[in-house]
Length: 392
Ligand SMILES: Cc1ncc(COP(=O)(O)O)c(C=O)c1O
Image (cartoon, rainbow, N blue to C red; front, side, top):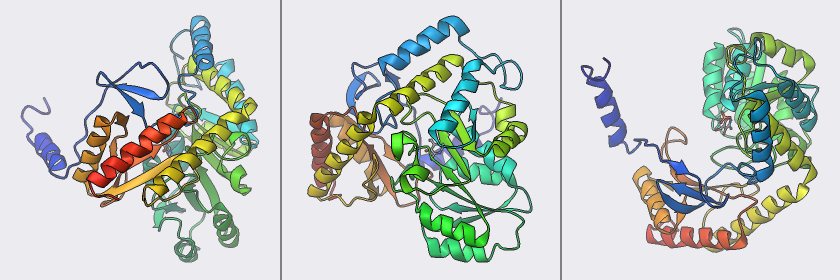
């Protein structure tokens, strides 16, 4: 059996431990409020969730999911192309296309699968993918699976992207891919400049809207709408502001038809359960009809940003609910997170490879449902721990 006689497994894990990168699971149990997290039996104020609009525990989504479970059952029983495609899946695809102002959409079982399915089927051996240095791991893996030449450009550095596009003119097709909002830094991609370069050098633009869907743009429709820059392909997930689960791609009808026939992570994956799909539809209804949710989120973002700046934190981004508190040293970041827990705040340490070496951090995020008191508790705790550990 692997493990008993093969000491290399333990040795590899020891190496990970030596670097301070050992990962362990924490267990979340139900808690009283959507702003709280019961972690390993202790209740904390949540300060690191992707549930930006607080919809993951919304009663209306839960009731919709329960009702759908009762009529459709628990599982979807098969791939979308065999027995798993319900009327709800079709409805969601229409809905998400309209939400994103695109012709058509395809729903995957996760954002990770949407990225690897899109990149691996769109780009091939004769093509090049130019990818921002801080793009999400699912984009990196999608580039690898595609067999295209992957070229990393420096984070949001348009001069570097220009140079790399000039050197890439001999490739058959060129794709530029970027997170819309960078998951660990919270800044927004410069889509306007990317679009100018893409037009000049003949490249397609793919945007991963995981952290902008529901957050930026009119009705939360995402980065392209926020910056008024149309793109060729949008990839996203329902697992952040939408509050449910699953991934999607939107674009032209031809693109979606192509992905339905080529994307292996679509073809060979069991479809999402209908209850999740129904809850997702409900969530989009709420987001589109209740603009206050987005406005509340923006208000909380500004409040937290002002407090953190006043306390002397050096902030990147600032327009989105993601606040990276860069500490650098990995062990110090772990200490920071543990100290926050003593103050009643849950915000785990983010370490390489999720972020570049030397840039370990606390990824502080805010939710529309956080109260002003919650925000004060969070910022005070960060100030106290920041002073103690000499981060500010
Ligand atoms: C930028 C980005 N893209 C894709 C994903 C993957 O989405 P999912 O969690 O639905 O697989 C994530 C989530 O972690 C993300 O942050």
